[in-house]
Length: 171
Image 1 (tube, rainbow, N blue to C red):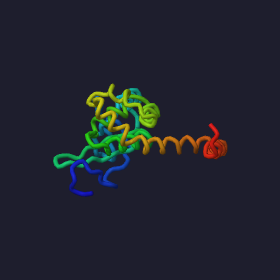
Image 2 (image 1 turned 30 degrees about the vertical axis):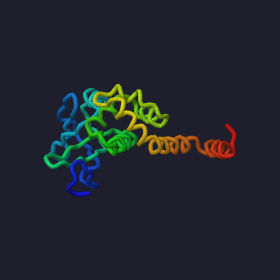
Image 3 (image 1 turned 60 degrees about the vertical axis):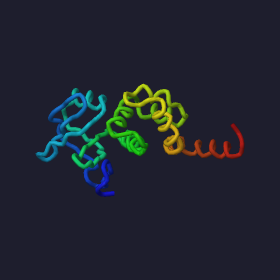
Image 4 (image 1 turned 90 degrees about the vertical axis):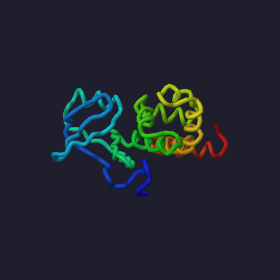
């Protein structure tokens, strides 16, 4: 949706691969074809970039506002998907969502939301009890289904058998 503040514009910048040229506590600059892109990333990504200073590939969420185009970078699809789920919740902006994604492994955050536990989210700056409860309420089904589908897929045929038994009433 063009023209909406904070709206994601598909296809603007979805992925960047290049040389890490500068680092700060919250951003890195990725030099791609002679152009330096300032990308907000998690502390873990900054840590990896600090040690390697080599080429890095990031999946990117492009946020367009009236006064800026901001890039948020992630090293894997799961982190990007969690981030995008989080910013879909009213009251959660990209900086807060990035804080959540960077606060623990994606699986831990996703499992906490899927299990309906808002207590973990309140440990992240900018998220109080009510906002944490709203995140859990709005995302529990979305993240729970995505996580469950990924888990079933990783179990293969055994996962299908377990699902069939559960559907028949077995625990």
